[in-house]
Length: 283
Image (cartoon, rainbow, N blue to C red; front, side, top):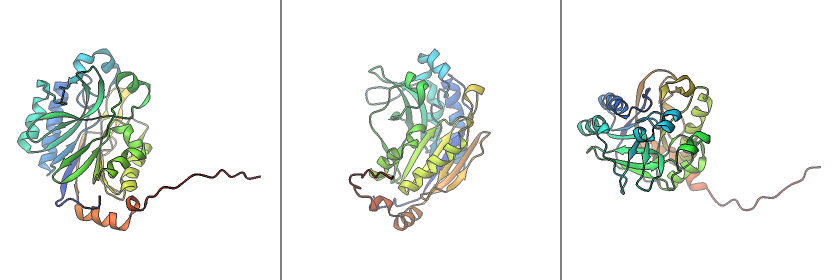
């Protein structure tokens, strides 16, 4: 857990406004954002929750066939609508994590983080375990396991939005040796305070980097508030986008800083069983 990666990793968190139900359009938009991130030096790009179909429950309810990506037995996704994004990842040698609605062979529909590798290979990497509210619970089946992504020697836990509101989710990633936590998200207008507390807290709780991506704008009933950011292992934002407007923010995950913070703040090593709790009555 205390062995840092050997080299720095430049990463990007993106925010933009996808079109509800139009996977081909949104994949092209994602490809453009990946190119912008690569131009700024990023080797890993995180895009928002459900970005490929847009986080728009009315559309997801109305047309599952058009808004889902079909996953094979091993999680592989072969959908021509994603070709622009695959090409961008391959030509720019960038790893991409992007949100999508995925239909599995057994019929499950999941809110997933899809991985586009530098080769262009595309797979379902992680299914959201903690679904938010009646809309998501009506649409999706929760995932049953966590996931850690390995990129250039960095161990990066995967979460999606509401997952990151639970300290134990980020801690499970840290317990698996994660140096960072990637969180495609969908925070609506009016939730900025919670958005900015949760992911800074997960970074500080676990002395790990957090890369947070969020959609922005959209339908007035489903309008998102941006704020894409990268947090350092003490919970400070290295970069943060505005609450409005398309943006790509880039920061470098630094192994020396990770080691320094973990040497100074030893919460991961200092944990112990706390035993039973006493109940006191004050008269």
